[in-house]
Length: 153
Image (cartoon, rainbow, N blue to C red; front, side, top):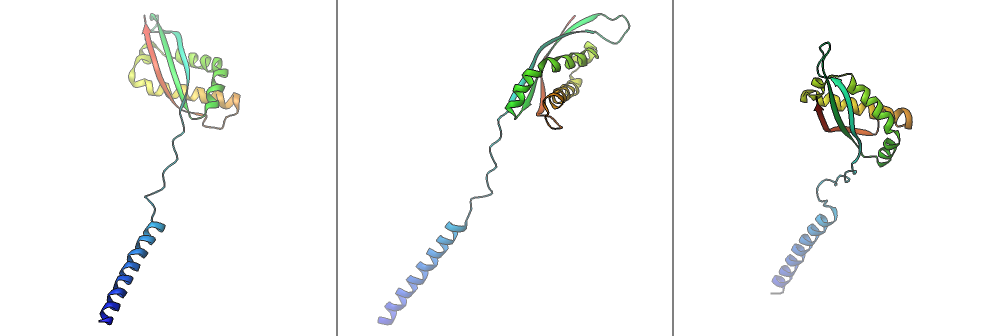
């Protein structure tokens, strides 16, 4: 009878040790999935607001003139870039006005051309900050969004 009790106690000890060892192994070495990515950086916006230019309606000789009101916002994860943009905004305004005046109202109002126009405005903003504030090539702004474009004859 002693042998049966000793065998039962031994079996319980071995099973308990195995279960405890398995639990300890998974608890100490098991990680919950891949590491979490860092939280995204906040996005800051710089605004070039309410530019008004006079442009020809179309490319024909002697075409009527139209007024175009234009606003664009630039996105950056660098808050200091937005502050620097505010200081250099007159230069960005002048270059953007020059860009707008090379086009006709018909071209500016074409939705298919808005992506290229936003890209050109982004290039202007980044170029001005690279040249005047010593930002690295590629510039601090990552995107440009046209927030307003209105034509009035």
